[in-house]
Length: 64
Image (cartoon, rainbow, N blue to C red; front, side, top):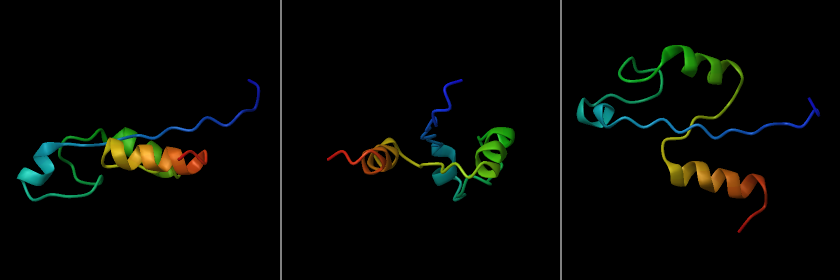
């Protein structure tokens, strides 16, 4: 491995959350708990929309 940092921008969306009045990635509806736990344990931000993730990407790399 070259030692380069790899950035990921995970997006979690599930229409059932809004429909059932649930919120958050810790909600047991629709999300893989192991994946959520892995991302959370490694301090990787989880985004709620593509636009939100893309804005973070642009800010991270100083793109306008």
